[in-house]
Amino acid sequence: ASRGPTATGHWPAAEVGQALGSGLNAEAGANSKVAKRQVQDKPDCAPKGLKNWTGTGSGFGGSAGAGSAAGVESRLPIGEVLDVVALADAQLMRSLTAQTPALAKFLADGPRPGQVGSAAAATVGRGAAAESSLSALTSLASTAVKLSGCYAARKLGGEPPEEGEFVSEEEREERRAKALGAAKELGRVAVWLVRLRGVLKTAFDTADPDVIGDANCDRPGANGVAAAASASGGRPPEMLLEVVAYAWGWYVHCFDVVTYSKSKDPAAQPCAAVASHGLALAGMLMEHGSPLALSLLDTPFQPLRLSPPHAAAADDEPLDQPSSISGLAAVVARLGRHPLTFEPVQDPHRIWALQAHTLTLLATAMDEGGLRVVDRLADAGLGLRYGDALVGYVTLIREATAERVQHIQLPRLYAPLRTANRRFWLALLRARNPRLTEQVLLANVVEAYVSDWLPDENVLKVEGSNVTASFARHLNTMLVRTEAVEALEALQQRARTTGALASELVRQARRHSLAQGERERFLRFGRKVVGGAESVVRMLTTLARLGSPSLDEELETQANVPNATVIMSRLQQTPSPALTKVWKQWRALETQRGGGGGGMGGGDEEEKRTDG
Image (cartoon, rainbow, N blue to C red; front, side, top):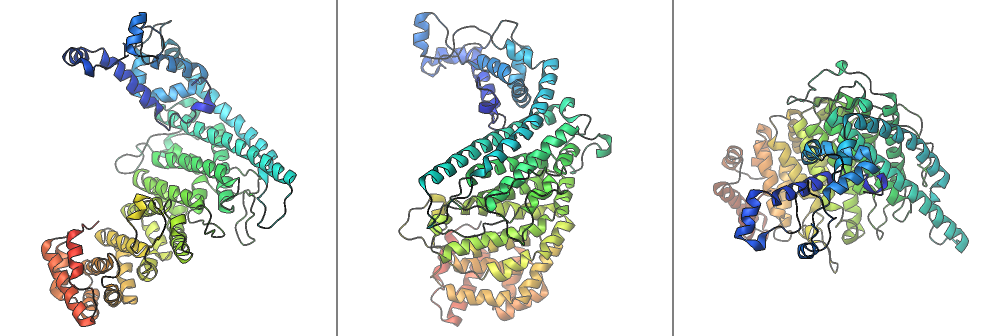
């Protein structure tokens, strides 16, 4: 805490205030009557070294016995920490107090002048707090300009030498020094972004007029609309808009640097950290969903006039060019970006972690941001960009499979990307926004699932390599096909509220003869593929539950599914022993007709497993 904002800028996001509040509660509980009674009954369970927070004594250290022998009380130094924070960074003290009721109660009830915690109580007073918030915003604005100039002077360290290129030792040292300098400046930018997010969060929680002016920061109500009309609030202060514009500018620049860099590029790692903090800021504003938050998201990014180490191709959009693109549009436009080249034996590219982060934040925004946030996302073309994200995601899996480097590229990436993709798809279905639905149709997302992902029968095999436990459970399974089955099942379960997408699924299923194709895949799978026959049954059940007469006819004529089985699958939306039995009979009959070796043995596997 004594080192100031550089060391404590991340405290609001890391919930340090809650930890300090828990310490205060522990001290209070240790001196309560209930705690004393417990100490008398069970001396071994007594909390040691805790005294009342209003007492005096030395700082925390040593055992309780040693403290008693010396006649000096020993306790947790919560009050001292708060005093140090208040003297070093008053705005941080106010932010922690706004987030933690225990701290607010302690300082409000609290210490008299001269006691432990009195400096913190005086700092979060009304006048001091207002002065602190205003000075914090002014400091952020002036620092933004300085960071841009210092970073530009570092020249980003240059790009690493190409393979086989001769580089002298002096030039190598010069490049290393530039890279370290650029990384240091980017570290300062990351701290600045964290600080900005903390100031904005505190201003939103307390409606601080010195930061937000007379802008409306009311969150949306239960119906997704703000409690007060946006016209009732004024325009945010120009200084705040300028600071946020610089934040979007840093995000755009650093994200593009990561996109056009290679795995070993020294600028990739610090730029990825800055881009991640920029995404966190955008996520906080989208989740808040107030008119003020939307105004900040609509703020155009400030071009930094910096070029990434790997320039974009001639047909790509210019980087860091003056434009009226808002921060939210810049975030959505970068969904689906993927590396220029695939490096099989290098560490996974950092752009994939940013893509997973982006999908997760956008899913949360659609769920909790309200109708206005969803409309803004539709204005930015989120549905179209989601199609690009799916293409990049499946390309990564297929390239890793083709190069036989799944054990290098996928263990750290597959789980977060899979989770983020599923969360986004479910949030998109729940949003029920007509324009987003139209964009998803234009991006051919449903068609990609039916015609490209479902027929992908590549099985994940990793031999002679150690992988994580979370990734090991996907071994010997069809990654792409399994995700397609889950996505289409989720669409079918929400067919009543997603009419256009459900109709598109029916159309694509008929166009690509999905029923016949699934039957043929069942005969090919047999017992050779783990979960292969089960995935076929899940997909045929999904088609039966869509309630389309034309699909019912194709199931009966092309897949040999009895009409009674189709009707039972439609009536019983959850797994049951009777439904499992009829599908087991279908599998046995199809195995006999096709002469395959799968048959009845797969039914035991289905009975033992629980459908997701």
